[in-house]
Image 1 (cartoon, rainbow, N blue to C red):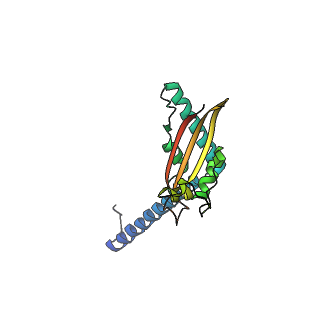
Image 2 (cartoon, helix red, strand yellow):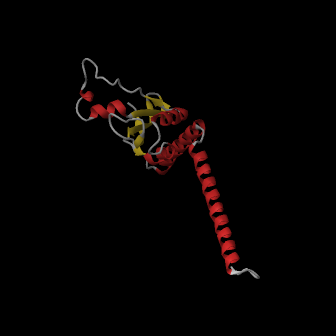
Image 3 (spheres, rainbow, N blue to C red):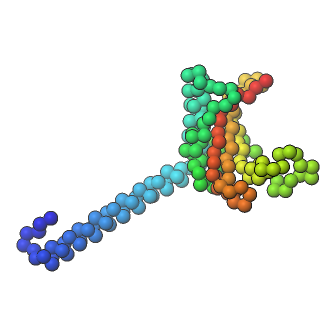
Length: 176
């Protein structure tokens, strides 16, 4: 950058001024990008839930059309993770899933029942008490149905179970 009719001192001043303007523009562009990302993350839960449902229904139809559907289960965790990413609060995750039409099973009580079943024993004890289990019926005919079943695992078992660490989701055939 050559400025005609300027001295070295004023040229340095102009370069510094130009650098400040460039840095200011970069900061403004970054702030705008962060704001847009926040808007996407803050997508209305109703809309997020509706989009999740559409994608799950599309995945089921694609599996049927291609003949790849397995009644024992078809992994769709990657779809659910787009709408319930790691680090999502369990409250936000539940809201998104309910907006999709999922039935969320209530968490078992913190204390075991007076006559505990085998599920309360060993390592399953903490998982059963702090994971979220949700079911969505995609299709039903008589006693047969196609379900999406989701398990949201907590960041830390026991103490901190307010944040999603893992998502497991599958489409299953459930029938007689």
